[in-house]
Length: 281
Image 1 (cartoon, rainbow, N blue to C red):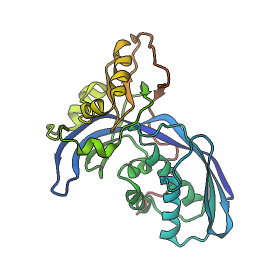
Image 2 (image 1 turned 120 degrees about the vertical axis):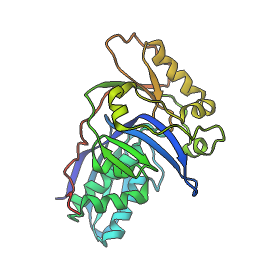
Image 3 (image 1 turned 45 degrees about the vertical axis):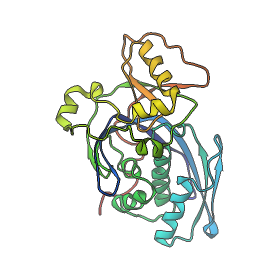
Image 4 (image 1 turned 90 degrees about the horizontal axis):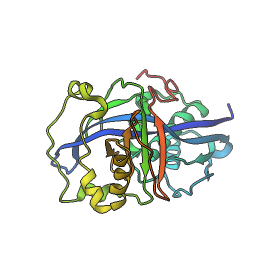
């Protein structure tokens, strides 16, 4: 195999995000449901000799040491692989949106290079590597919608009904570190259960990060209002600044401000690359 083209990296939405406490080391304890959606980046991989790793940005210019490049380097170092690769990236998922675009790209890179370089690493091994890149990477590697707890390391697969969601991303982004360090962040939401979530599904919960994000980025409030004006119950995903709402037949026509991105997305039952790595440990 010399190349892999049109390899997808889907985004996620946090259907809710509750902060239930904080560990002595400062890490926040959370509960959330991560849901895959069909808003995807697309990556292309061409095997190159000599161990050289290069990247070409086809849409948005990424940092030199972005998560895609770091994932390739980490996999190469871990395995001692002498193969190289040229990676072309069609970035569509917006940055600083709370949609996990960078983590998803890293997961797709690990899965694709595991196949392209014929490394045959198990999914559990890739997850351990992915965790070094970011807390959300193992979720994308597992490839199932999930109930997430702890600091993001406790992942329980769940089934979600097929649905569509309006997603709006303001031009301005939000720095995750600023939100988690903010003194006004609510950190004591009572823990919930999967059963309680399942009874309400897309109407359950809130995002504890949202009030702080709205204070730091007024455009979050503007995006929420666009969906509210359409008669939809909206909330922010992750640390923002993207917001979303479950689409309903009763939704009214939306007027989206200039420079805001808006897309109607469907959720995914499983990641498109499910099965690309062995589940054997």
